[in-house]
Length: 385
Image (cartoon, rainbow, N blue to C red; front, side, top):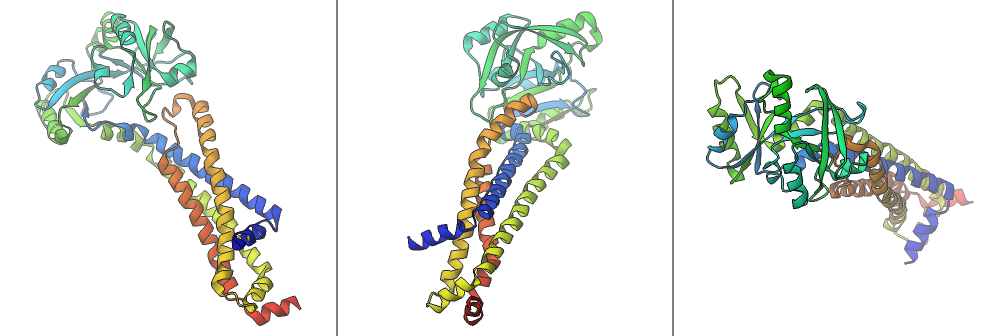
């Protein structure tokens, strides 16, 4: 208890220096947590991907479509329990900055393949009955003020024209890792409209979502599906949902790596600041350490004072930084809207913040502790005289 009081008194001896060091630690740990959460947000789709779902797309590129006739052939593959379709729409809501994912899907069974999307059964039936009906995520509804019954008009880019929809259901996520910033509507509505306005662009499917009865056979079933369409006019590439999501992340992987490096650079900088603070402390108190050693206190006690003070400062700054990460991340997530559909601070991020805090406290005390332990009694007492 007395040692703890001594450590506390030492930490508060230079209040301004300690306060500035704490401020630096808080900012560094907060920045590290926020940057780590940004990195996690890029990988959120891949992390939330189901092992029981495959994605079948055109082997050349996602830009090219597949014919609807493939659905029945994929259903016949052993191990496939359900198949649904989806088309990327790419419309604009009011102005280009209002970006959010929009998909034309099979209204009858698409949500059966995604149990993580929680929809009220009666609202889902309303959506299925209304050809112009749409299902929107909770985050998307909160961002733009959508309510059930509201009309929404999207200006098509890939599919030209103004497209009118009516919000019939709002879905929630089963947990925080679920993307609730998406907009879904009837593929039949898209297809019938294209038959009237641009017949050559009708009857096109962007991707097939394939549900497996046995996820352990994912690789085998993927090969069987692709073999069926080998040497056809539209060959396929079937991969797990996670691999499909990671293919998008790979496009901006350099940016993600840069963000991760910057987050660790921030920790290195505050480590240098903290080490400098503790080094100054050790040099200023060399006479005190010599006195303690002269009174019979062993070197390890002197080292313990340095390490304890460093860990105390790091712990307070780290805890404040971690605590502030949650409200700051929540505010950042609201400010970015649908840019980061899932923006939550993970347990892994908090663990990394805590580990960095501990590491900074220990490493910063290493050299000052060694210096204090090796202080010569005679030289230290001479400084007092």
